[in-house]
Amino acid sequence: MVKIKRLSIVLGLTIIASYSIIEAKELDPSNSSQTAPLHNFEGGSGVYLTSLAYLAKPPKEGEIFGPPSISQSMVLLDGVSRNVFAVTGNVLGSVELGYSYEIFDVGDWTDDIYNYTGMRASDEISLHNFNIRARLIDEVDSDIPWMPTVTFGTHFKWNNDISKINKQLNGLGDVAGLDHDFGTEFTLMTSKTMKDLLPCPFILSAGLRNGDSIHTGLLGFAGERWTTVEASLVMFLTDRLIFATEYRQSPDLVDEYNLGGIVLIEGESEWYDLALAYVIDEHLTIGIGYSYTDFGNNILNQDSSVWALQLKFNF
Image 1: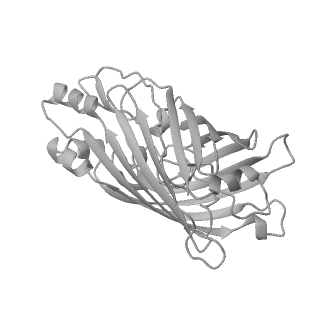
Image 2: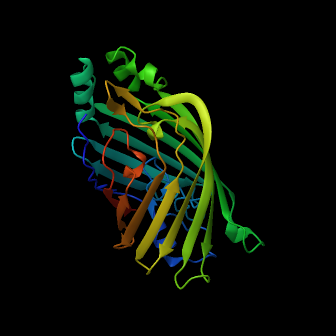
């Protein structure tokens, strides 16, 4: 299989959000509506790969629903592309509902499989992510200075195409361990805003994730669960310019699969990235990211080094 040179640009988180960016950039620790600068690919408030414990902007007093956030993302590769459409909203101030729809175009991958097996499969994989996150502890309400905000999340994922592709390949997915098309993950995230330790304010986040997703669910689910850790650092360089870096441990639930010495499925690896977000105004934010692990999407035996661009619009 020809190695695909990775160049990605996550285009676009378009149209919607809640004034959450504005609350985040103000960095007022007395303000419980503080939230993440971007959407992650799985449809939650966070960076690219991980969530923050801060939720979408809460509703105004006397209302039930806060203003929603909608986004569109695209990752472009040579012969492969990934599009993500996401929306988040807040209910009653302490619950975030999120959804994302991912479309993964793997045209070159299916061509490689056909070349080496003679079997033709669909070249598109779609994944639904349904998220419910509830805030358990709010740092603003705590009398303990170091207490972080704590959020628990349940995430139901459904891969719309992996079973079909498995049948088209006469059970090749079963051999590789890609034998479930849905799964549920649980997350426990903590976030704490620090204002005085460095010249610029920053947010530290860390958490646990339990699930059986293979490549975040884009290649299905393993049927066996694993608990992993993830963390992020978000720094507010100015009121409008935000720097972030994040780490997400791989559950490593699938082994490298090769046929005749040709790698058709790459094993999972640890994920890292760097990101910048710029707040244009109270409605629109642009994010640019770089990852040498392809944002956790290194499914094929490809070169790393990937760029990402994200646009987010806030209502």
